[in-house]
Length: 268
Image (cartoon, rainbow, N blue to C red; front, side, top):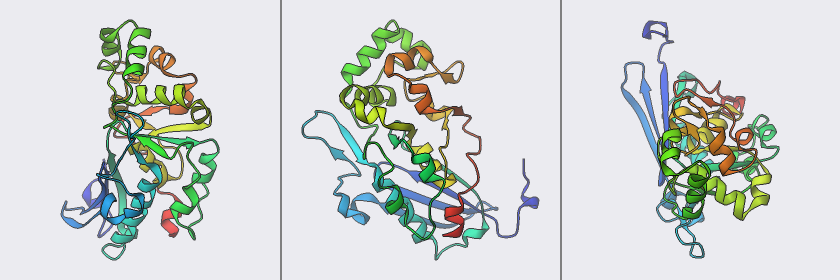
């Protein structure tokens, strides 16, 4: 572990939180003193998305609640711009973050190449607006997947068996049933998806310029992970959608570093 004495003078630590209604940043010194903080509220600061409480409610599909993926991208960009007058970004030695659990993002085929070659002379929104196979991200408030929940439970031997594997019976807000619904109702979207991220790994992916792994703590809330082995449960993956393990990528411990900050942010 790196001790405080080995840190450069004035070292800063940036913490990010991507929640349902806003994205927040807190900057700490190496003495754990808050030196800056900022928030971007989706409804009030990004009104062109016309969200209510950061979400959309689908009037044609009972219980379907989602957020516009690109709004999260724009919010992150705005948040960093608001922080710029307050801190010296060159002093930031580590970034950590959290995201609303269960929400998912669907990267379109070819988006890894886009992520790794972002032009610092252009905005994130302009470069990532076409990077997703669907612009709608199902979130934890969604309750439209009861059919899919029962199908997954039945496929593995019942709710109790699923809870033994993944830690809980199937719940509508969990990511696995939401992925299955997309596979069933919009197979062209699922087929065109290269990677599925959770909100936390989505933000990390943007920051490091490549697909960041889903961490085990968030993965445990998807109805997809074998909680005893800390790996994806092949039985549940097969019951959810085809080729799903490839789209999810490898799991990682929550304490693992996702990578170094992308040159896009360094130069920008």
